[in-house]
Image (cartoon, rainbow, N blue to C red; front, side, top):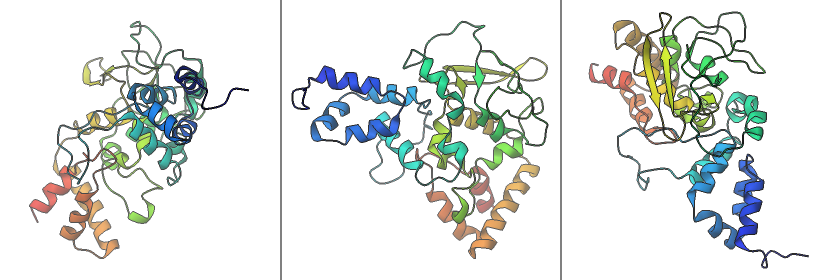
Length: 298
C-alpha cells in the first residue's frame, strides 16, 4: 500500500488535478500537512486552475494602491480560493454561495483550466447574475442564446431563466450594487457587490472570455470589458457603473439611500460616511463617489 511519505510530488499533483472543480477540497488538502502546504503553495497557477475549474476568475483591481495595513499589492489565487470558500460559510445569498451552480456541468466537461481563444461565432452564455444585478426585475421570463459579440439584453438559458430586460441595463439597479446596505442585512443583499467575492469572481460568461463587446439596441458598441484572465461579474459591473451619469436624478437617489442608512443607524451622515469609507470590499479597492460628493457638499 502506498503511504503518504512515499508519494512523489508528481503523484500528489495528480491528486490535485483530479480534484479540480472542488475548491473546498483543495483548501482542505493544502492544509493537511506541511509537505502538501509547501507543495501546493509553490506555484500559484495550480490555484488559478482550481479557481477556473470552479468557475471563478480574478477581477481586475482598480489602479489605486491598497489602503489597509499589511495589504499586499495583489491577491494571489491561493488567497482568493480561501476567500471564496470562507465566504460560503457566512453569506446568506444562495445565488452568491452557489454562484456557478448553473454552469457546474459545463465546467466538468470543459477540458481547459484557463482562457482559450474562441471562434467569433462560438456560442457564449451570460451568467444569470449579469441580468439579475443590472436590469430591473419586472419582466416575464424567457430564454435565448447569446453569442461572443453579443447584445447584452438577450437573456441567457439557465435553470432559473432570467427575465428579458430592456435594451440597455438599468442605471438604478447598477447603482444599487455599489451602495452599502444595513450592517445587519449585508449578507442578505448585494450591497455592495464587492462585499461578495463569490458573486464578484464568477465568470461573466461560459465559456470565460478575455474580452466582451456590448451593443445597444441599434447595434452600436457602448462598452468593452477586458480581463486577460477572464471577464468576471465584477469586471462587467464596474464597467457598467462607469456609464452611470453623475446627474441630479442619481445623486438624489444615492442621497436618499444614505440618509435612510444614517437615520436607521443613529449616526450623522458624516459619521456614517467615515465608517463606510473604511469598507473597501474584498479587493480593498471599492470607492463611493456619490457619497464622497454628498459629504463634500454638506
